[in-house]
Amino acid sequence: DGPLTEAVLAALAHADAVRRLEVRANADTPEDAVRARALGAQGIGLCRTEHMFLGERRTLVEQLILARDDTAREQALAALLPLQRADFTGILAAMDGLPVTVRLIDPPLHEFLPDRTRLAVRLARSPDPDPHDRALLDAVERMREQNPMLGLRGVRLGLAVPGLTAMQVRALAEAVVQRRRDGGRPRPEIMIPLVGTVEELRLARAEAERVLAEVAAEAGLPEHDLDCPVGTMIELPRAALTAGRLAEVADFFSFGTNDLTQTTWGLSRDDAEASFLPLYLERGVLAVSPFETIDEEGVGRLVELAVAEGRAAAPRLETGVCGEHGGDPASVHFFHRAGLDYVSCSPFRVPAARLEAGRAALDGTEGTDSR
Ligand code: PEP
Ligand code: MG
Image (cartoon, rainbow, N blue to C red; front, side, top):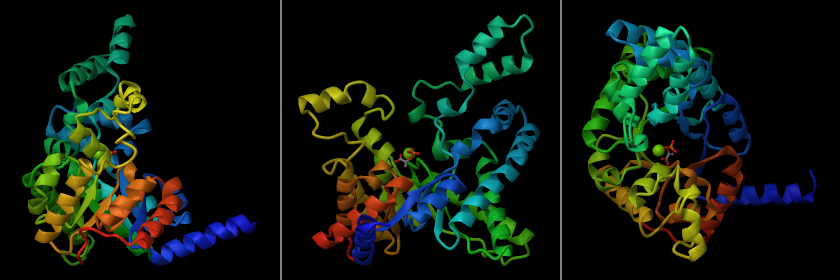
């Protein structure tokens, strides 16, 4: 409550009055959403749903992995549905009236599957090995990938596992119906991860829209009443390079600059920090980590290209960024100049992003945004 707080609040109010970039937050729980909102977030730009399948729900995920037929898979998905619906209800309530971008599941399989070594050790040590563990280990072995970050993730997983996308979209749609009945104003958006071709996006979108219409019918609502924006992440160079075509199917682009940096540089986001990146920084090969501050000459040019081609194809296309760079001060200036509509970052970085967005607006330079 001291003079310092007052000065900070005044600076934030000033920044909010002049900035053009919206600031949203990345949040996966109602608690984070509440925190983000208190810090001035204007919505959730990225709700990562894969985290919701860990912890106690692992047994259901195992059931899904082990499902040998449609019935077993459908049972696992049916058990996950009410849990996922409750996740969304809480987040939509915390962000009532503001956009909530729900990203369909995007786990690199190594983060999601049961630990292979632990399973193998448990089986080897047990005098009477559990057949469930044995089947699980077999399944994990079958699904093992050399490069999980370049493997069965994102939209690929949604297309490979029948019913998975439908379960998530149904959970969201049912949460929306429930919130509306409770007098809320939910504003969901559906985001498809790791898209590389327009066909992937078309299939995922068609599935989402089919389920939205189905839930609307069950709730006695008009066919398109639950329709909501469906967009794509741009986190592969191919997506950026084919942005014009993607924009014909997407209502919005959200740049996943973590993966886009990884795939543009051919640099593992999980390993680089621990291996040669420090050496590169020390030797001056790099002035700053490209995972921290947007690399304007490479990744940044893909962003600019995708914004320009996306908007040429679809002038009303909304654009934002939800990678870590969304909360990095220098990168926020870049995103302002590139003409994005919003940045989305961790809740605790929201105030700094608001300030930087204000400063960027006062700097006055703006690039490709011609609207
Ligand atoms: C990204 O890749 O920038 C992104 C936001 O998605 P995630 O970090 O979950 O891969
Ligand atoms: Mg990503």
